[in-house]
Length: 279
Length: 165
Image (cartoon, rainbow over all chains, first blue to last red; front, side):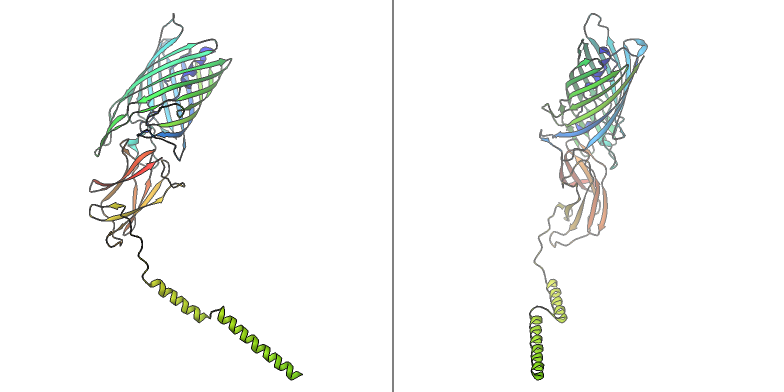
């Protein structure tokens, strides 16, 4: 039971956001960290833009804190019961397609170690609409507009009372030209420490992370400018219930509590997540 | 006796008439008087008024034309935001004479966010009169500092700053 809960480490981890222009290009990878071979999860989040950090560092409380609904579908498969796995995630924001991700991971065999170690490599796919592709009044930005490559490490340790984990992610966007706009993204990184207490079928968890994006250079016929770097510190809490191989969890993430934040929207979100696993 | 009653009645009538006449003179005006008053009012209104406040040249065009900028549609709290539609109108006028003129041709307007180097959905322009245009379908898609760019013949000649909170 405790081992099955380690999957929740990934879902308790906050989804880190970069500057509002660039969409969400950092996310907790859809890795399988338990014994099953297949995993399917669906989540729905209500995200409120609570604060906004301007380019000059001033923190503004928006007059209009309109919330938006975001949904994600994640699938994962362990290949031939071995250490390798493949995964994918697809997202929607306000019923419009957001960016997707495909990747592969490996679990290192560390039989003599008390913790498990995973590494992954994934590609972010700009299936969402970027800020450079707004052509109609009904269009909203839902993606970064660029492909990206990222790699990361996840370490987990399980105890009789619960679990702890730590992750580190590093990535870089790939240059892309959209219409007459050339985008040259830079690197991004995130880190996170999380833990949880388990009692029978219940788990209470929390985590603290840091998300950083170095910005990008954007070249248009009229201008050539650098978008400033952004940073935020998401804090998360979660509660979950395990039933056989299925799981339901409720988590809260808040980027407004810890700073300093730089040039970013600071969001609060509530996420409901369903996970189904099988062999 | 009858003579006395008749005389008293007659006297009362005279007094009553006198009283009524006095009250009419003091309070009521005859229709003819009203008609004269209205004519007087119309005459007064047609006289040159005190000079109006000088119109502000919000936007100066390369050819020397001026335009007055005023928001038409704003959110309920009066502050532009990142989720609702906005609109503004431009009234073109000659700064020296303060009279309206035909609006500038070849005018292109778009929204731009300098810090992120991107724009928004194209705005719509509608000519509402010879000297006035309405610019609508204005959506600032995120918070931050925006500019409304005014271009003529492909060149930006004016930038109107808007802060979206």
